[in-house]
Image (cartoon, rainbow, N blue to C red):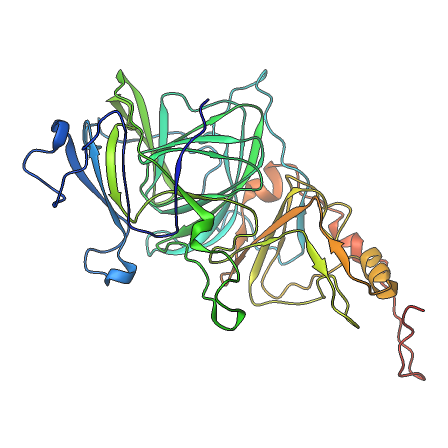
Length: 417
């Protein structure tokens, strides 16, 4: 397919129109009596109307038919999507999952929505406070189906296979080592090209923001230009009674039928859009990555130290190996260290790092690990603990070889020679 075009920026006021309909954006007003090309004007709001300008999120869409043109929503198969955090008893142990298994297309066709599996989460959807971690495992494109989330934003992290994502704002290609964010209420459909796997962080009631800079300086962390927004693209396609719109509402899935493609937006303007990251190394709210880098600290234990944390930490691996646990933590798998559960490098990593000669060295080349971190105490679903059959029951054994190095008669540590 042709190379897709994007607009650069995070949270910017942007405008785009499909070049097949020049002048589709109204001039000087949002809601004219008759829109250019006889389109319908529709506003999509991601914040309250009365929010201050700095936090107000909305976009105007100019479309062939308004999104209200559908049959009533009805409950549909929930699959493995849940927000029931009481399915199983709490488990405070260190948890690690082997790579989640992708269904074979030859056995069963599974698209992005039917391949969603809720792994863990916390909070309450109805009060707009909380989050969930999902795994997606799919092998076929969505076709005449789209999805939108009334509950929160999806931060999507593909691990295996690229995604072609159709949105009301245009199209995006998202590949492993990139992320994308589909914000609350935005309709999208996913095409895949092979057996595909990845991770999703869903947040309720808030939107992702870039972290403040402060003492790290004007140019640290992610910059707004590191994010790409799709440009307008529409399809005027009839699907008589055959296009399915799936809505996640209060944690449940509902489906409605309509006669046309929902991706019929000819032009749009605003600051409430989907977006993807241009390059690895981007941090959004409580999404953190561990990219290739130089290790240069002197007289320092360089791997992640042992710690207990008031935060919940879910980690995933896109490719390569993670420095603190080179065995067992594999691409397509994950780990969860819950609130105040101790964790840190395995015994082999500790011994190796304690004796290493501290010269400048490259760390994590060919590797990309990430973390979803939350102040909420996350519960694991029944699928995560049992049904997936991917939980690593031997995870705790990686710390069993740790031994005491205590020298009560000598304060000076025996470091590398």
